[in-house]
Structures are given as C-alpha cells and as structure tokens.
Length: 563
Image (cartoon, rainbow, N blue to C red):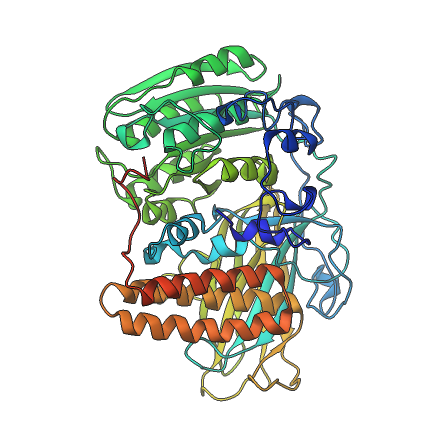
C-alpha cells in the first residue's frame, strides 16, 4: 500500500515506494537492501523474522534511546503578531526547518481507505478520517524558532468551503524542539493485549515476505517481534490474549529478557470468538498493578476491531479507556487487516493517551516501526483546548482534526493528547460571516491551553486576522502555503467521505460530489506543486473511477483477504 506518509517525507521520483529516499532507482527493495539502510541485521530469511533481529536488531544503542526522562514541560513557540504570548500569527517568515514534529492522538492514517481502493472496493464513509489524513502529511507553519517540547503556531486563509460559502480558515500547527537523534524515550511498562480469535487468522502459520495478503494474526506476531526487539532493561512487558477466553500468556517480564518474551510470541495460537472487552479488562488489571514502575504505562491492543462477544459498541469501550487514562494508562491500537472495524476504531482512539495505526502488509509494518517508533509511545501534552472567539459578525462553522463538538456547545474544541511525530500536525477551524457575504474585517482570537507531560498547565492566546489582501481568481488567499495545503486536504477528505456516504443510495450524487472535489483539488495541486498532494489526487481519481464502474462498497471482514 502506498499511503500519504510515504510521500510526505520523500523528495525523489521513487517517493511512493518504501524508503525510496535511500534506494537507488524505483526497483523493489529486498532484505539485503534493508540491511544496508541500517535497519538491523536482516538475514535472507522469511519476512516472518521482522522484529526478531530484523527491522531493529540493535534496540538499546539506537539514537532514540531506551528508558530515561520524560520531555520537559512545554509551552507555545513562535512570535509574530503576539510575540509576548510566545505565538506566531504567521507574520514572521522564518522557516520551521530543523524542528521535529508533533501531532494529535487518535487515528494516525487513512490506511483502510487506501487499501480498499487498491483492492477495487469503495471504502465505507468512516474510513475517510481527516485527522488520519493530516497525520500522513507534514503541515508545519513558519514562525520564530521553536524552543519548547510543544510549539503551536497559527496562520489564516480565505477560501470557499465545499458548498461555495465564503470562509475564513485558522490553522494551528504543532511542532517540537526535541532532537530525535538525542531523544531518550520514556521507560515503558507495556501490556500487549492480543486478539487471537478466528477472524485474525492465527491458524495460517506460513509467513512469507512475498505474501500479498498476510493475515492479521501473522502481522500481529511480526509486529510483536519488532516491538520486543526495541525494549531494554528499563522496560517491562506482559502479554494478555483474548478470544473465547482470556489468558495471561506472559506475566510482567523485564524488557531485556528477549528470548523468554519471543518464545511466548511464537507460541500464540487461535482461540475462538472475539471478546475484546474481557481481554481489555485483564489488560487494565495488569496495567494498574504496575503504574509508576516506569515512566509510561501503556496497553498495546492488536486487533481487527471486530468484537462479537461482550461489549461491541464504541461508547462502552470509550468509557473503559477513559477510566484507564484516569489511572495514567495509555493505549496504542494496532488495527490489523482489510476487515478492520474502522467505525469502532474512530470512536475509541481519541481518548486521552490513545492513538491508533493500521497495518495491512509487511511494508506497512516496516514503515510503522521506521516512522513511528518511539514517537507512538511518547506523549508530550494532554488536553489541548482551543477556545475561539470568531469576532463580531462571524461564527465558527466547522472544525477538522478535533473530536466533534456537541450540539449547542460554546466554540471550544479539545485534543486529548499530543504525541511526538516525524510530521508536523495541524488543527483547522472554519469561520463564516453571518451575512454570508464577505470576510472583510475578520479578526479572531483563540485561547489555547494544555497540560504538559509533567502535569504543568500552560495557557496562551493568539490573535489572527485577515488584512484585506487581494483574493485570487478562485476567491482564495493563504497567509502561508501550509494553510493552503491543510485546507485542501481537509476539503478533499470530507468530500470523499460525503461521496462514500452517498454512494450506497445515490451513486450519481456521489459522483457529482467527488468529481467536483477532485477538480478543485487539482487546482490546489497545480498551485502548490506538492508531490504529496499529487499522490492524493491520484488516490481520489482511483476512487471516483471505482464509483463510475459500480464497484462494491465496504470492508473485507469475513473474506479470504481479511483473515
């Protein structure tokens, strides 16, 4: 699968292949090539060995470190229009080059949508996740140098919404002054909660690097191997399995006892139906007993997110994760396979301390470990709240990258967790004039606050305004290219989701919605000349072609390709 994140970090013509920056030409990579890239001692063995001396054979000497201090408390970086508050309003032209990234928790990719389109199916509407799309791209803004673990910058744009209504846009970007080469990740108490039910396909034990459709169970085992090889003496791990019954396959074990841990991983096998609730109850019991023994206590959930016994709805699991977060227990969800239950995943991944990644093949697995470890287990801020005062005569119309605002609530929006990331994340707010006509004189204020990693509250303010700059022929103005890119991605993703929603009942309306969005997005691509956006345009064109052909819609749960 070729997802946006692979394009976002590339500068060569081979950008859509895994690790193309380091490969010569656009040919297929092999295990020897991966070894040359410094991903560990990779032998000419089946790809099942990923993680077992494969993707990361030298965990304790890696620059990311193992164990150690949590990042210091952070504040707001930048300067610009409100320099006294530590913010950039976009006026300062300094670039963000050399800074590291930060992004909101929750769903971290649009993997299911991309994989289903590649398989010739129209994805369900819930597979088009704006925050997932944002996390696959680098959406930083320019401003004064970032001097904190979390720096937030702001900038504005003017552009019509997908319905043509004049709109002002506020982007908040996230970055960090953390040096990834010298970063020491938190020491970890991990509880791997592993779905061993029939839908995961653990019974299929053959593991081949050339297998186009490895089962979710096969991928879970390979990912567990890779993660275990990243642990060190300051870490510990337990393994809980669930199917028809729950089993503590491995009690809490020092992270450097690799042989004992890997032996349990190799022995995992299939065990009936999917009682995810019972598995998580055991995992949280195990986690609560070790809170405080390491810097970070975190459950790693390996699942296709298709529970069929016990609790099956998002609200119940959300309450469970909320309770765990109250005990300082984080959650990382690895959604496995083409049968992934995206709706449930979306409903629970936004909880404090949580994030979620999808994995469909060995390329995804290798990319995940290369791009997202150890950042996926390294939160730097919690409970980021943005309270917007849109200005007299203007109203907040929509947000992107935030959890949904309750009907009738004041214009305040929250992101429960900010994690370190290779990419710089974004939050987006759309403001409309009450008269529906003009944005002349628009000025907004935003109060932003969060809790740093060590529990210190931080609050700052940013003032942003449209200064009446001339609009282009499409009725657009963007203070920075980053705002343009973020708005374009938000509009495309929401339109793809809307079209997918329409497709089941009115395919003609779905085509009209998506074709209009594609035509507009193509204009953004031409102006920005951004390779990552070009890849998204191609993805949208593949989707609309499937709709023209009347392709079937939905995930592949229960099919031979999903398990």
